[in-house]
Image 1 (tube, rainbow, N blue to C red):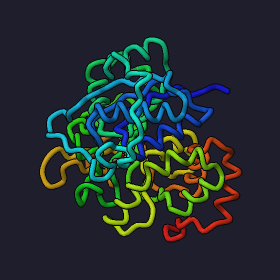
Image 2 (tube, rainbow, N blue to C red):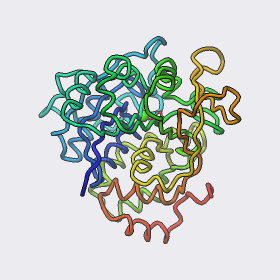
Image 3 (cartoon, rainbow, N blue to C red):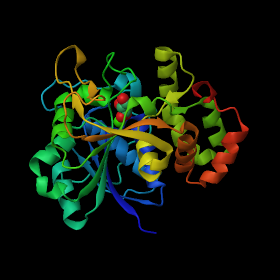
Length: 331
Ligand code: BDR
Ligand code: CA
């Protein structure tokens, strides 16, 4: 099987960690490197969390590169209220001591990887600081990137950090603005409108435990804090897991409906970090973004659960069809 080479840029983070696990368990993907950006947790904690996920998947051979530690212009605000002080739901998973992160920083890591690989998919699961610096500093190397898929922003849906802004774009709006203005390839955007439908419910978690308890153990440890956060903040039973949808979408684009439009990012004022979609073509600019709008949430969850457990999607499909998943309220 021809594997697609991917670089994952992330701020792990509970849902980033789940996304990395799904990617590592996807036989169609070859994760050639993971870079870390400031976001849910400070970069040094994110690096350690990526190593913890790699240890869990027995893939400590994959290099982890430490990237930007602060946004381009704005002051940095973490999301440790959402992800725990350790970024993994205060799960106290022991540090990885047997392997260290690469001595190369993210930019040097990209240069190194892309001198050996081309046609690489870049999956951005955190604020876009590393991506902006990459496009800015290494435009020739960037030509080896054939897809840029970004979790961030919101179109019709409200924000999750301000009334209109999603966290990744809100944390570094200048980086997001730069990337949307300067990306040489169309951005594939996975916004809150679709990720909000990806709810990992207690029923689904229990089902995972019945199917494969050892493999569910790590997920169970990190997700409990997220469950509590969602209950306290939104009175939602379960946790919205945004980032794994990026992995599922790149492999199964048929589960989503999309539009192509011009998107701009607000870099100041009351709408800071908002992704503005020029739906009626007021600005007469060529589309720079493929925006996901609707997804088959149940099918996405089938792929996420089978990715987390490393088992056949058909098995999860039939099991999920038999139980009340808790997703019913969304349909
Ligand atoms: C995004 O922000 C982070 O909290 C999540 O990891 C996700 O990438 C959702 O707004
Ligand atoms: Ca993230």
